[in-house]
Amino acid sequence: MRSLAALAALSLIPLAAQAEDHLAANGYGYGPRPAFLVSRLADGDLKSRLTACLGQQAEPTLFSIGHRGAPMMFPEHTIESNVAAAGMGAGILECDVTFTADHELVCRHAQNDLHTTTNILTTDLAAKCTTGFTPATADTPANAECRTSDLTLAEFRSLAPKMDSADKSATTAEAYQGGIAGWRTDLYSAGARTMTHAESIALFASLGARFTPELKSPAVEMPHEGFTQADYAQKMIDEYKAAGIPASDVWAQSFNLDDVMYWIENEPEFGAQAVYLVEWSEGFDEQNPETWAQDFAALKAAGVNYIGASLNMLLTNADGTLAASDYAKAARDAGITLIAWTLERSGPLASGGGWYFQSVNDIITDDSDYLVALDVLAQDVKVAGVFSDWPATVTFYANCMGL
Image (cartoon, rainbow, N blue to C red; front, side):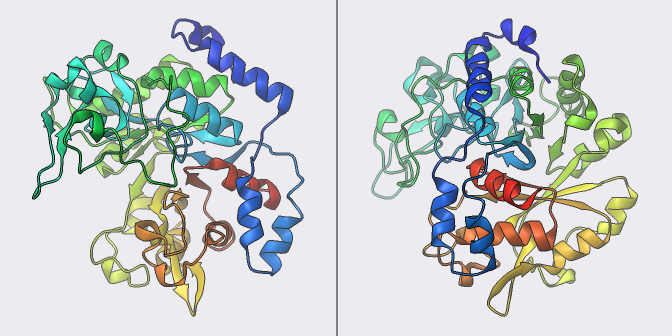
Protein backbone atom coordinates (compact mmCIF):
# COMPACT_ATOMS: atom_id res chain seq x y z
CA MET A 1 0.00 0.00 0.00
CA ARG A 2 1.44 3.38 -1.02
CA SER A 3 0.31 6.89 -0.08
CA LEU A 4 3.04 9.24 -1.26
CA ALA A 5 0.45 11.88 -2.12
CA ALA A 6 -0.52 12.03 1.54
CA LEU A 7 3.14 12.30 2.49
CA ALA A 8 3.68 15.38 0.32
CA ALA A 9 1.67 17.60 2.64
CA LEU A 10 3.57 16.23 5.63
CA SER A 11 7.09 16.93 4.32
CA LEU A 12 7.99 13.25 4.64
CA ILE A 13 8.24 12.51 0.95
CA PRO A 14 12.02 12.84 0.49
CA LEU A 15 13.02 10.31 3.13
CA ALA A 16 10.15 7.91 2.42
CA ALA A 17 10.83 8.01 -1.31
CA GLN A 18 14.54 7.44 -0.70
CA ALA A 19 13.72 4.48 1.53
CA GLU A 20 11.41 3.01 -1.09
CA ASP A 21 14.05 3.50 -3.81
CA HIS A 22 16.67 1.83 -1.62
CA LEU A 23 14.42 -1.16 -0.91
CA ALA A 24 13.52 -1.47 -4.58
CA ALA A 25 17.18 -1.41 -5.63
CA ASN A 26 18.76 -3.39 -2.82
CA GLY A 27 15.98 -5.36 -1.17
CA TYR A 28 15.68 -5.85 2.57
CA GLY A 29 18.70 -6.56 4.73
CA TYR A 30 19.56 -8.32 7.97
CA GLY A 31 22.88 -6.66 8.68
CA PRO A 32 25.49 -8.55 10.73
CA ARG A 33 23.56 -9.17 13.96
CA PRO A 34 21.58 -12.34 13.11
CA ALA A 35 24.74 -14.10 11.90
CA PHE A 36 26.56 -12.97 15.04
CA LEU A 37 23.83 -14.46 17.25
CA VAL A 38 23.76 -17.71 15.24
CA SER A 39 27.53 -18.06 15.62
CA ARG A 40 27.13 -18.01 19.40
CA LEU A 41 24.49 -20.75 19.55
CA ALA A 42 25.43 -24.10 21.03
CA ASP A 43 25.75 -26.85 18.43
CA GLY A 44 22.42 -28.53 17.75
CA ASP A 45 19.36 -28.56 15.52
CA LEU A 46 18.54 -24.85 15.93
CA LYS A 47 22.05 -23.74 15.06
CA SER A 48 22.20 -26.09 12.06
CA ARG A 49 18.91 -24.89 10.67
CA LEU A 50 19.64 -21.20 11.16
CA THR A 51 23.18 -21.54 9.79
CA ALA A 52 21.74 -23.00 6.59
CA CYS A 53 19.68 -19.80 6.18
CA LEU A 54 22.50 -17.29 6.52
CA GLY A 55 22.69 -16.68 2.77
CA GLN A 56 18.97 -16.22 2.23
CA GLN A 57 17.36 -13.05 0.90
CA ALA A 58 15.62 -10.97 3.55
CA GLU A 59 11.88 -10.53 3.02
CA PRO A 60 9.36 -8.50 5.03
CA THR A 61 7.14 -10.51 7.35
CA LEU A 62 4.21 -9.73 9.63
CA PHE A 63 5.85 -11.91 12.28
CA SER A 64 8.47 -9.17 12.75
CA ILE A 65 7.12 -6.09 14.55
CA GLY A 66 9.20 -2.95 14.95
CA HIS A 67 8.97 -1.85 18.60
CA ARG A 68 8.98 1.94 18.35
CA GLY A 69 10.95 1.41 15.14
CA ALA A 70 14.46 0.04 15.76
CA PRO A 71 15.39 1.74 19.05
CA MET A 72 18.40 -0.39 19.89
CA MET A 73 20.35 2.14 17.82
CA PHE A 74 17.87 4.76 16.53
CA PRO A 75 15.91 7.28 18.62
CA GLU A 76 12.52 5.71 19.19
CA HIS A 77 9.36 6.87 17.42
CA THR A 78 11.27 8.82 14.80
CA ILE A 79 10.97 8.68 11.05
CA GLU A 80 14.51 7.32 10.83
CA SER A 81 13.92 4.57 13.39
CA ASN A 82 10.90 3.27 11.49
CA VAL A 83 12.55 3.46 8.08
CA ALA A 84 15.38 1.37 9.54
CA ALA A 85 12.90 -1.15 10.97
CA ALA A 86 11.11 -1.45 7.63
CA GLY A 87 14.46 -2.00 5.92
CA MET A 88 15.04 -4.90 8.31
CA GLY A 89 11.80 -6.49 7.14
CA ALA A 90 9.46 -5.51 9.97
CA GLY A 91 6.05 -6.01 8.38
CA ILE A 92 4.26 -4.19 11.21
CA LEU A 93 5.37 -0.91 12.76
CA GLU A 94 4.30 0.72 16.02
CA CYS A 95 3.31 4.23 17.02
CA ASP A 96 2.69 4.64 20.74
CA VAL A 97 -0.03 7.27 20.70
CA THR A 98 -0.40 10.13 23.15
CA PHE A 99 -1.72 13.70 22.88
CA THR A 100 -0.56 17.31 23.09
CA ALA A 101 -2.11 20.27 24.92
CA ASP A 102 -4.31 20.92 21.87
CA HIS A 103 -5.32 17.22 21.74
CA GLU A 104 -3.36 16.32 18.63
CA LEU A 105 -2.07 12.74 18.50
CA VAL A 106 1.69 12.17 18.40
CA CYS A 107 4.05 9.19 18.65
CA ARG A 108 5.74 8.95 22.07
CA HIS A 109 6.20 5.95 24.35
CA ALA A 110 4.66 7.88 27.23
CA GLN A 111 2.94 11.22 27.59
CA ASN A 112 5.56 12.21 30.16
CA ASP A 113 8.86 11.14 28.57
CA LEU A 114 9.96 14.25 26.67
CA HIS A 115 12.70 14.98 29.23
CA THR A 116 14.45 11.69 28.35
CA THR A 117 13.57 11.30 24.64
CA THR A 118 14.03 14.87 23.34
CA ASN A 119 16.17 17.96 23.88
CA ILE A 120 13.35 19.90 25.60
CA LEU A 121 15.35 20.63 28.77
CA THR A 122 17.95 22.53 26.74
CA THR A 123 15.35 24.69 24.97
CA ASP A 124 13.09 27.57 26.00
CA LEU A 125 10.21 25.06 26.18
CA ALA A 126 11.74 23.67 29.38
CA ALA A 127 9.82 26.42 31.17
CA LYS A 128 6.58 24.66 30.20
CA CYS A 129 7.52 21.28 31.71
CA THR A 130 5.32 19.88 34.46
CA THR A 131 8.46 19.61 36.62
CA GLY A 132 11.55 21.56 35.64
CA PHE A 133 15.06 20.16 35.82
CA THR A 134 16.37 19.65 39.34
CA PRO A 135 20.12 18.95 39.57
CA ALA A 136 21.48 15.96 41.43
CA THR A 137 22.74 16.40 44.97
CA ALA A 138 24.65 14.05 47.22
CA ASP A 139 21.34 12.56 48.39
CA THR A 140 18.98 12.93 45.44
CA PRO A 141 19.22 12.05 41.74
CA ALA A 142 18.57 14.63 39.06
CA ASN A 143 14.92 14.87 38.07
CA ALA A 144 12.51 16.40 35.55
CA GLU A 145 9.13 15.62 33.97
CA CYS A 146 8.04 17.01 30.62
CA ARG A 147 4.79 15.94 28.98
CA THR A 148 3.44 16.18 25.47
CA SER A 149 0.35 17.68 27.12
CA ASP A 150 2.55 20.58 28.31
CA LEU A 151 3.02 21.63 24.66
CA THR A 152 0.97 22.46 21.61
CA LEU A 153 1.56 20.39 18.50
CA ALA A 154 3.55 23.24 16.95
CA GLU A 155 5.81 23.34 20.01
CA PHE A 156 6.20 19.55 20.02
CA ARG A 157 7.33 19.66 16.37
CA SER A 158 10.19 21.97 17.29
CA LEU A 159 11.84 19.37 19.55
CA ALA A 160 14.81 17.27 18.48
CA PRO A 161 14.54 13.56 19.40
CA LYS A 162 17.40 11.73 21.10
CA MET A 163 18.09 8.27 22.47
CA ASP A 164 15.92 7.57 25.51
CA SER A 165 18.28 8.23 28.42
CA ALA A 166 19.04 10.44 31.39
CA ASP A 167 22.15 10.97 33.49
CA LYS A 168 20.70 10.94 36.99
CA SER A 169 23.98 12.25 38.42
CA ALA A 170 23.80 15.40 36.27
CA THR A 171 23.99 18.87 37.76
CA THR A 172 23.07 20.64 34.50
CA ALA A 173 20.29 20.10 31.98
CA GLU A 174 22.91 19.61 29.28
CA ALA A 175 24.60 16.78 31.20
CA TYR A 176 21.21 15.21 31.91
CA GLN A 177 20.96 14.50 28.16
CA GLY A 178 23.52 11.70 28.59
CA GLY A 179 23.24 8.37 30.37
CA ILE A 180 22.94 6.27 27.22
CA ALA A 181 23.49 2.57 27.92
CA GLY A 182 26.90 1.38 26.76
CA TRP A 183 25.38 -1.09 24.31
CA ARG A 184 23.26 1.58 22.62
CA THR A 185 24.55 4.47 20.53
CA ASP A 186 23.88 8.12 19.79
CA LEU A 187 25.30 7.67 16.29
CA TYR A 188 21.95 8.02 14.50
CA SER A 189 20.39 10.80 16.56
CA ALA A 190 21.55 13.80 14.54
CA GLY A 191 18.70 15.13 12.44
CA ALA A 192 16.16 12.57 13.66
CA ARG A 193 12.54 13.70 13.39
CA THR A 194 9.45 13.20 15.51
CA MET A 195 6.11 12.14 14.01
CA THR A 196 2.46 12.81 14.60
CA HIS A 197 0.25 9.74 14.58
CA ALA A 198 -1.20 10.77 11.21
CA GLU A 199 2.31 11.14 9.80
CA SER A 200 3.22 7.68 11.07
CA ILE A 201 0.25 6.24 9.19
CA ALA A 202 1.36 7.86 5.95
CA LEU A 203 5.01 6.85 6.44
CA PHE A 204 4.27 3.23 7.37
CA ALA A 205 1.91 2.90 4.42
CA SER A 206 4.56 4.26 2.05
CA LEU A 207 6.98 1.63 3.38
CA GLY A 208 4.51 -1.18 2.73
CA ALA A 209 4.11 -1.93 6.46
CA ARG A 210 1.00 -2.47 8.56
CA PHE A 211 0.12 -0.76 11.80
CA THR A 212 -0.01 -1.47 15.53
CA PRO A 213 -0.72 1.78 17.39
CA GLU A 214 -0.83 1.69 21.18
CA LEU A 215 -3.14 4.09 23.01
CA LYS A 216 -0.98 5.17 25.95
CA SER A 217 -2.31 5.82 29.44
CA PRO A 218 -2.59 9.60 29.94
CA ALA A 219 -0.37 11.21 32.55
CA VAL A 220 -3.04 13.88 33.03
CA GLU A 221 -6.43 13.45 34.63
CA MET A 222 -9.16 12.60 32.15
CA PRO A 223 -11.25 14.20 30.80
CA HIS A 224 -8.55 16.69 29.86
CA GLU A 225 -10.20 20.02 29.07
CA GLY A 226 -13.27 18.17 27.76
CA PHE A 227 -11.26 15.50 25.91
CA THR A 228 -12.54 12.17 27.26
CA GLN A 229 -10.92 8.74 27.18
CA ALA A 230 -13.56 7.69 24.63
CA ASP A 231 -12.70 10.74 22.49
CA TYR A 232 -9.05 9.73 22.68
CA ALA A 233 -9.71 6.10 21.72
CA GLN A 234 -12.01 7.15 18.89
CA LYS A 235 -9.67 9.80 17.49
CA MET A 236 -6.91 7.23 17.09
CA ILE A 237 -9.18 5.00 15.00
CA ASP A 238 -10.58 7.96 13.07
CA GLU A 239 -7.10 8.82 11.78
CA TYR A 240 -6.83 5.38 10.15
CA LYS A 241 -10.27 5.75 8.62
CA ALA A 242 -9.40 9.22 7.32
CA ALA A 243 -6.26 7.78 5.70
CA GLY A 244 -8.26 4.99 4.04
CA ILE A 245 -6.45 2.22 5.94
CA PRO A 246 -8.52 -1.00 6.17
CA ALA A 247 -9.20 -2.29 9.67
CA SER A 248 -7.61 -5.61 8.71
CA ASP A 249 -4.22 -3.82 8.51
CA VAL A 250 -4.45 -2.37 12.03
CA TRP A 251 -3.82 -4.02 15.41
CA ALA A 252 -4.82 -1.31 17.92
CA GLN A 253 -3.33 -1.92 21.38
CA SER A 254 -3.93 -0.81 24.96
CA PHE A 255 -3.11 -1.90 28.50
CA ASN A 256 -6.51 -0.49 29.43
CA LEU A 257 -9.14 -3.17 28.85
CA ASP A 258 -11.80 -0.45 28.70
CA ASP A 259 -10.11 0.94 25.56
CA VAL A 260 -10.15 -2.50 23.94
CA MET A 261 -13.81 -2.97 24.84
CA TYR A 262 -14.59 0.50 23.46
CA TRP A 263 -13.16 -0.51 20.09
CA ILE A 264 -14.94 -3.87 20.13
CA GLU A 265 -18.28 -2.18 20.86
CA ASN A 266 -17.95 1.01 18.79
CA GLU A 267 -15.54 0.10 15.99
CA PRO A 268 -16.08 -3.67 15.64
CA GLU A 269 -13.97 -4.04 12.49
CA PHE A 270 -10.99 -2.55 14.32
CA GLY A 271 -12.02 -4.20 17.57
CA ALA A 272 -11.72 -7.67 16.02
CA GLN A 273 -7.93 -7.19 15.93
CA ALA A 274 -7.59 -5.04 19.06
CA VAL A 275 -4.76 -6.22 21.31
CA TYR A 276 -5.15 -6.30 25.09
CA LEU A 277 -1.67 -5.70 26.51
CA VAL A 278 -0.65 -7.43 29.74
CA GLU A 279 2.59 -7.58 31.69
CA TRP A 280 4.25 -9.34 34.59
CA SER A 281 3.21 -7.82 37.93
CA GLU A 282 4.20 -8.55 41.50
CA GLY A 283 3.03 -11.98 42.63
CA PHE A 284 2.59 -13.33 39.11
CA ASP A 285 3.74 -16.90 38.46
CA GLU A 286 3.57 -18.06 34.85
CA GLN A 287 2.95 -21.63 36.08
CA ASN A 288 0.29 -20.85 38.71
CA PRO A 289 -3.22 -19.96 37.45
CA GLU A 290 -4.18 -18.60 40.87
CA THR A 291 -1.82 -15.67 40.25
CA TRP A 292 -3.15 -14.74 36.81
CA ALA A 293 -5.27 -11.60 36.47
CA GLN A 294 -6.76 -12.63 33.12
CA ASP A 295 -9.76 -14.93 32.64
CA PHE A 296 -9.06 -16.07 29.08
CA ALA A 297 -12.44 -17.66 28.46
CA ALA A 298 -14.27 -14.53 29.62
CA LEU A 299 -12.06 -12.29 27.51
CA LYS A 300 -12.64 -14.42 24.43
CA ALA A 301 -16.40 -14.40 25.05
CA ALA A 302 -16.29 -10.60 25.30
CA GLY A 303 -14.66 -10.38 21.87
CA VAL A 304 -10.97 -10.06 22.84
CA ASN A 305 -9.07 -12.09 20.26
CA TYR A 306 -5.50 -10.91 20.89
CA ILE A 307 -3.32 -10.57 23.97
CA GLY A 308 0.11 -8.95 23.82
CA ALA A 309 2.15 -10.30 26.72
CA SER A 310 5.64 -9.59 28.03
CA LEU A 311 8.22 -12.30 27.34
CA ASN A 312 8.45 -13.28 31.00
CA MET A 313 4.79 -14.34 31.03
CA LEU A 314 5.16 -16.65 28.03
CA LEU A 315 8.44 -18.40 28.90
CA THR A 316 9.29 -20.77 31.74
CA ASN A 317 12.21 -22.89 32.93
CA ALA A 318 11.42 -26.56 32.25
CA ASP A 319 14.23 -28.62 33.77
CA GLY A 320 16.89 -26.20 32.61
CA THR A 321 15.52 -25.39 29.17
CA LEU A 322 13.32 -22.59 27.86
CA ALA A 323 9.72 -23.69 27.30
CA ALA A 324 6.21 -22.34 26.80
CA SER A 325 4.62 -21.31 30.09
CA ASP A 326 1.32 -22.68 31.36
CA TYR A 327 0.01 -19.12 31.09
CA ALA A 328 0.76 -19.12 27.37
CA LYS A 329 -0.78 -22.56 26.86
CA ALA A 330 -3.97 -21.59 28.71
CA ALA A 331 -4.42 -18.44 26.63
CA ARG A 332 -3.86 -20.37 23.42
CA ASP A 333 -6.28 -23.13 24.50
CA ALA A 334 -8.96 -20.46 25.04
CA GLY A 335 -8.59 -19.36 21.42
CA ILE A 336 -6.57 -16.22 22.19
CA THR A 337 -3.88 -15.21 19.68
CA LEU A 338 -0.68 -14.20 21.45
CA ILE A 339 1.86 -11.53 20.54
CA ALA A 340 5.16 -11.25 22.46
CA TRP A 341 7.07 -8.16 23.59
CA THR A 342 9.92 -7.18 23.55
CA LEU A 343 12.93 -9.06 22.17
CA GLU A 344 16.41 -7.48 22.26
CA ARG A 345 15.41 -4.79 24.74
CA SER A 346 17.54 -6.32 27.49
CA GLY A 347 20.93 -5.64 25.96
CA PRO A 348 23.75 -8.18 26.48
CA LEU A 349 22.52 -11.37 28.17
CA ALA A 350 25.77 -12.65 29.73
CA SER A 351 24.45 -11.91 33.24
CA GLY A 352 20.79 -12.76 32.66
CA GLY A 353 18.05 -10.98 30.79
CA GLY A 354 16.66 -8.69 33.48
CA TRP A 355 12.98 -7.81 33.67
CA TYR A 356 11.97 -9.28 30.30
CA PHE A 357 13.39 -12.70 31.20
CA GLN A 358 12.71 -12.75 34.93
CA SER A 359 10.82 -16.06 34.73
CA VAL A 360 13.89 -17.72 33.21
CA ASN A 361 16.82 -15.51 34.26
CA ASP A 362 18.62 -18.43 35.89
CA ILE A 363 19.13 -20.09 32.48
CA ILE A 364 19.80 -16.99 30.36
CA THR A 365 23.57 -16.84 29.85
CA ASP A 366 24.42 -15.60 26.35
CA ASP A 367 23.14 -13.27 23.63
CA SER A 368 22.30 -16.32 21.52
CA ASP A 369 19.50 -17.00 24.03
CA TYR A 370 17.54 -14.36 22.12
CA LEU A 371 17.32 -16.90 19.28
CA VAL A 372 16.50 -19.76 21.65
CA ALA A 373 13.69 -17.70 23.20
CA LEU A 374 12.45 -16.70 19.75
CA ASP A 375 12.34 -20.34 18.69
CA VAL A 376 10.26 -21.29 21.75
CA LEU A 377 7.92 -18.36 21.19
CA ALA A 378 7.37 -19.33 17.56
CA GLN A 379 7.28 -23.12 17.77
CA ASP A 380 5.87 -23.84 21.25
CA VAL A 381 3.99 -20.72 22.35
CA LYS A 382 2.94 -20.21 18.73
CA VAL A 383 2.80 -16.42 18.89
CA ALA A 384 1.54 -14.53 15.85
CA GLY A 385 4.33 -11.97 16.04
CA VAL A 386 7.22 -10.64 18.12
CA PHE A 387 8.06 -7.04 18.92
CA SER A 388 11.78 -6.33 18.77
CA ASP A 389 14.12 -3.40 19.30
CA TRP A 390 16.19 -4.74 16.38
CA PRO A 391 13.71 -6.32 13.93
CA ALA A 392 16.36 -7.92 11.70
CA THR A 393 16.78 -10.76 14.19
CA VAL A 394 13.08 -11.67 14.16
CA THR A 395 12.86 -11.19 10.40
CA PHE A 396 15.81 -13.51 9.82
CA TYR A 397 14.33 -16.22 12.03
CA ALA A 398 10.86 -15.86 10.49
CA ASN A 399 12.23 -16.01 6.92
CA CYS A 400 14.28 -19.08 7.79
CA MET A 401 11.33 -20.88 9.37
CA GLY A 402 8.81 -19.86 6.73
CA LEU A 403 6.72 -17.72 9.08
